[in-house]
Length: 88
Image (tube, rainbow, N blue to C red; front, top):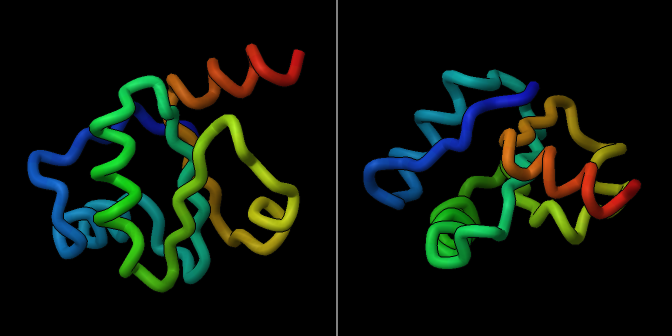
């Protein structure tokens, strides 16, 4: 699923988990985010670290195993543009 850039109001694990559970109800989710906005990216990584069913990946460091084992894939629009620029 391609989603708009999700910028949570507060970067708390509980708020992020509830937001992403609404977007995707899968048991294994890979969320690919752009690292263009570095402070926001670091906060998202820290908040998502304690969500067991979520794997947050930088758009520049995607690995095939992350994609293979995912039941659902969430990609932000800026991350998609970054992937297209890197893998042309």
